[in-house]
Amino acid sequence: MTTAQLHIGQTIRFDGNPTADGISAAIHDSRGALLVESGRISELGDADALHRANPQAQVIDHGDGIIVPGFVDAHVHYPQTAIVASWGKRLIDWLNDYTFPEEMRLADESYANEIAGRYLDLVLSNGTTTVCSYATIHPESVNAFFNAANTRGMRVAAGKTCMDRNAPEGLTDTAQSAYDDSKALLQRWHGTGRLDYVITPRFSPTSTPEQLEALGALWAEHPECLMQTHLSEQTDEIAWVRSLFPDARDYLDTYEAFGLLGKRGLYGHAIHLEQRERDRLRETGAALVHCPTSNTFIGSGLFDMDGLLREGQRIGLATDTGGGSSFSMLRTMAAAYEIGQLRGRALHASELLWLGTSGSAAALHMQGKIGNLAKGLEADFNVLDLAATPALAQRTQRADDIWEAIFATIMLGDDRTIKETWVGGQKAGATS
Ligand code: GUN
Ligand code: ZN
Image (cartoon, rainbow, N blue to C red; front, side, top):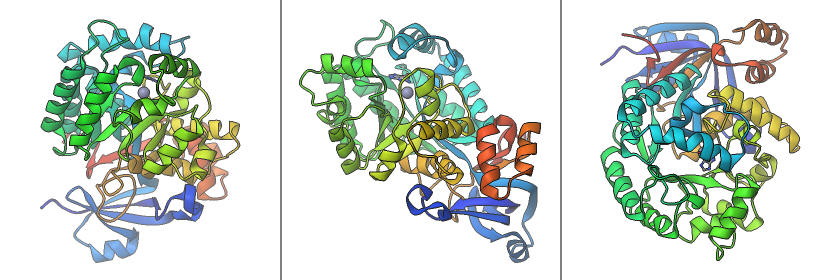
């Protein structure tokens, strides 16, 4: 039995969803505490009361630090780490000129191991404790990622990217090999430790109907798994989908027709949606994943956060590394705010923080495990320093309440704001 830890500081947790229930669903305690035992939060409450009730616990006092849930990034491509921030292209050219050549390099297992480790260290230093990642078409790239996450004790989800057309030679599989390799990886990894396998057709332009059908069949055999893909990111992409699937009613239908629309489906971007697509996404309870820094960086468009929230859609937040221009979920929340402004909704700091923690966790169907500070959840959390830089310190000092300070921290913060990150009750980066 490991010693219980009592983490004392300011705490922020959610007892509801601020985007639906109002901002009072976010609860700030100026002297709160978490009792952590065996990697989980076993108690939560007032620091002095918890200390009195648990005198044996090791006290870790974070002072003025703000304890928030670990960030959850619901859509990333870890293999694109080294080409993040590549200049001047829109989606299809960006894929062909930067992404595919780099993804080809992950055929080399030692390079895949290097990138997986580098990527996870980068995100941990930015306070992200869970990601849902695409790997490359190479099964070894999935092994590399899960091994690297396991070493760090992180809860992650990932899958082999499947493509059997419109990608360079050396970066394609077939309908049958995509099915076989995905199934073997799923059987090896899904549910081991903190790892989940995700069935991953890249997007309908790079899959034949036969491949989509094979992956739909695999999902039907394993409905416990998530399925991730891309949907309606750019208008040229949508026109391309129309020409490739002339019988489809719309882009979503290219997935729906093959059994690839469901409650555990994750649809990245989802910007230019038809009403039928919105209705079907809502009816099935599928998740839309908003990738704001990517959408401005690749020039894709403005996600309709306000309209989609009002409709009751399930929405997660993500960096979309390396189409996204940052590894930081703080920066991503800031970009979501900026895009929200352009679409007529100024998201409150509690809504932004919720989207990057509990909201993304719910999109990944992990809300019973991560994404909040609550009894029984896994102890993945950050300690934020609201005076980490001179610009931030002078602004947060002026704040009248905690939400004004948190909002400024979202807008001005970066990895320096993340004072400590704890993963499953262990401090990330600690060498012991
Ligand atoms: N659509 C298909 N593949 C990708 C990708 O790797 N990144 C982005 N942003 N969009 C995609
Ligand atoms: Zn993506």
